[in-house]
Length: 317
Ligand code: PAP
Image (cartoon, rainbow, N blue to C red):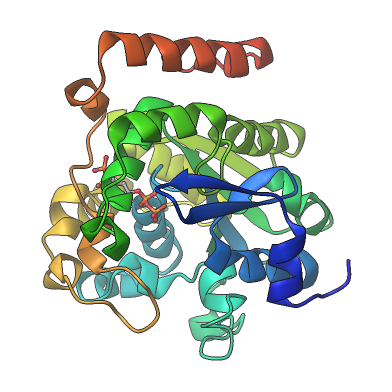
């Protein structure tokens, strides 16, 4: 694919309003993107070449990215996992389309070299598998995908968006968020296609792609951390495996992580456009019940059945 300028790219793409009168999302490859990320998304699709040793955390926004960043970092860098007490997980693991190939940040942040501390690179992305198939299918890199039930994902997205500077002028109403989510018209949407893309990858190439849900991780974090470590080639060994796993699970728990000063910060770190504390809100399963009427629950559950069940993914409904 040829490399083209941001202006040309934006003007040639379908766009739709998702919030108020002037906030648009742009469609690339069947998915919706924020205008400020299009250049980065395009750069990753066209130029990113993973190393066989790379670990790529893929996720739809608000489904557990921050948590998985902390866990993957701790599993791979066991002796330096204490860095999570002083650095936000997003500062330790770059987002490819934002920190590495994004317009504003591309020159400031390079992909970390492969041999930093002799450990493997961990990189993250919200780009759907459908747009990265060529990149990922030709590589032996390992992909970890986390997903979360659609109702909590939507509620978390709604809260997060309403923390953006623009929301001070005009909030994103909940009923609009529900309507846009169901149409797939939210950043990185459609959610359902995003999830199914990576789920199919994990079924097709289980050695290279690991799929897990926020809910199963909450329910039994120790088992899933052990599975993750094995998948990545960093199994826990020794007589104190239980204690090692428990230390990582605790160190990455919402309660512990969200209480570090660095993660309470309301300032805007140079490499991120959002305050550190915006990635930690409540961290529970089922919070949607406080926000959704029975009618909205039925609407989303019906959509979930339609989109997931026919592919054998029975996900809580
Ligand atoms: P991102 O895609 O923008 O990086 P992401 O980390 O995927 O966001 O999602 C944030 C959600 O994960 C928040 O959920 P909530 O709004 O329902 O509370 C956040 O609180 C939650 N979260 C962050 N860290 C953890 C953690 N360590 N354990 C469990 N949930 C967490």
